[in-house]
Each structure stands twice: as structure tokens, then as C-alpha cells.
Image 1: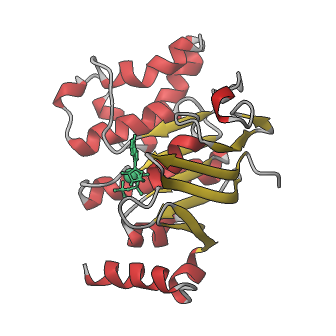
Image 2: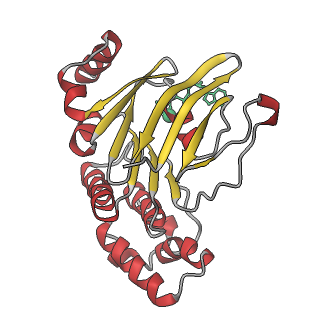
Image 3: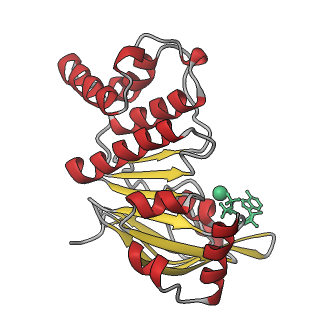
Length: 249
Ligand SMILES: Nc1ncnc2c1ncn2[C@@H]1O[C@H](COP(=O)(O)OP(=O)(O)OP(=O)(O)O)[C@@H](O)[C@H]1O
Ligand SMILES: [Mg+2]
């Protein structure tokens, strides 16, 4: 199956230091890809480039076959008019709008002028998956961190995205909220054929829900392997050290 999202020959530096180098990787619907690696390895930079938020110095990202970035020469680089409506990003810190949980879940659907019955059906479905049925009328200011992150994911999922990109979505959440988010991602992936790309520092989480793991180190994508291979035969010394460091810490 052709990948929904594909990155090719990406290079991006800050102040002359390489922050992200990726030769070639694709993401298909129905697959959860975890992105792991030490702090400063380039994971967030990579996600931002995938989502069209950071224009890379070199390389191209293809979404549904269309390029995200213009030109090769740096001074002419910029975003194309590629329609990113089916791609959503969820950050570590949920950025919610003021108002109720329902307002937040409804916002994108209203922008898209989705009719009321379809809106209601989708909100009910997504709120159900995320355990937010009873919270729809709550003000977001009163939510716990776990509830707020569930709303942030819900706001993304109501839009029926093709790709969901998440940067450490469960950092600092308690185990119950972590499991709820994980279950929702697995369900979105398997039932709605979403391509999930998720940075996590939680290797147990990657093992639980990911199909494959990409390992970043020193600003470079070092490897992408099926999840069991990643844990069974760490192919590089750095990867092994990273895994062992996690086990100790
Ligand atoms: N906007 C920026 N300006 C300057 N340097 C940046 C910027 N964003 C990232 N960097 C640098 O690029 C490198 C990669 O950062 P990035 O945030 O992608 O790492 P990361 O793997 O997500 O780390 P963490 O696990 O701590 O979130 C780091 O050295 C960082 O300091
Ligand atoms: Mg990061």
C-alpha cells in the first residue's frame, strides 16, 4: 500500500547544528509508528517537519502524493498549497479553547460546516471512545491534565483524520489516562485506518501499541524496525545503550 505520508532526504539544522536528518520513511494507514530516542535527538523537529510546521532546509514531505514544500533552494523554500485537512497534530501540552468540552470537540466540525446530525454522531462516538460522555458540558478550565489531553485527542479524532501526529501525548499522565489514550489510538488506527506517528519516551508504551519503532540519535533517524525486532536485537550500540538506559532509569 502506498504510504499516506512520506519524508525524503530531510535535513534541518539550527545554528549550524544538525537537528534532523531522515533519509526516507513512509507512514501508512492502520499503522502505529513510535518515534523514540534521547532528549535533543530531533524527534519533535521531525514531527514538525512532517506536519508542515517547520520548513526543512532540504528534502520533501509527501502527503497523499502531494509535496508539502516548494523548491530545493533554501531562499525559495516555503509551504505549498497542499491540503493538510486530514492531518492533525497533538502536542504534549494540550492547547484547548475556552468553553466546554463539547465546544472544543465541535470546533473543527463547525469550521468544516459539518451538518448538525453528523456532528452529534461523531462527537458522541469519539467522546465514548475517550470516556468523555459525561464531561461534554464541563468547562475545560476545570479539567485534570489527563482529561484535557483526552479532549485534545478527541478534538483531533472528530475530524476523521488520515494521519494523527502526537508529541509525547501521555507524558506526566497517570496509568488510567495513559491506557485510555492508548486504547483510543489503537481503535482509531484499526477501525478508521488512521496512520499514527507518536513520539514517546515510554518504551513500554511503544511496545504495547506500536507496530514499528523509529530510533533517533544525534539528529538522525538511525533505524526503523518492527517493534519486536527493536527490543530483541538492538542493531546498533547506541540503540542498545538507549534501551539499557531506559531499563535502569
Ligand atoms: N526552534 C529551535 N531553535 C533552535 N534550536 C532548536 C529549535 N528546536 C529544536 N532545536 C534544537 O534541535 C535539536 C533537536 O531538538 P528536538 O526538540 O527535535 O529534540 P527531541 O528529540 O524532541 O528532544 P526531547 O525528547 O527533549 O523533546 C536540539 O539540539 C534542540 O536544541
Ligand atoms: Mg521533543
